[in-house]
Image (cartoon, rainbow, N blue to C red; front, side, top):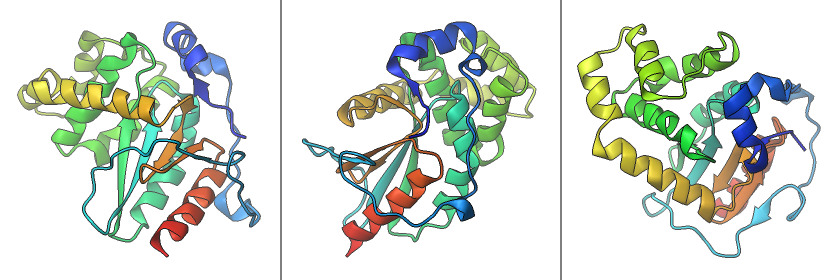
Length: 216
């Protein structure tokens, strides 16, 4: 199973920097052999279903991630390609995780970028800022200073970043992480029914199997 940033390690990651936790080697999707996946081993069925925010006939997939997580950074390109290939009835959402209060500004950063329509352009750049440039974007001032260099309308960004909506959505993200029993990132939540811990590209194969079972 893929190494993950987990609750126990998260304070270490925010204090020392996520790169100190080591790199993750991911095989390309084409190198993964077809396998059958077992409940309790590759994924968990939730004992208490989580309410989903999707219309009737749609299926919701949540990606739990943290910008400080090196494994999330390495997983993100595979996940992004996978998400863009899903049919319209599969609603894919990213959920920024905060395992401690120090991570809350990064949750608000993601939701501010989403509000402004800047996720496509800047989401992976935030990851790169941490893991390539080794910037510590862990508070409002450092985040705002970095965003100002990205050609963003700062009046609109500050309103979104510090507004009621971003704070409320950050709290909702933490509630979802707790409801799914999240223990590490990256991880996927499938339609309020299943939890898939990060297992590299295999994570997406498991998601495909579960989605197929839900849609049949």
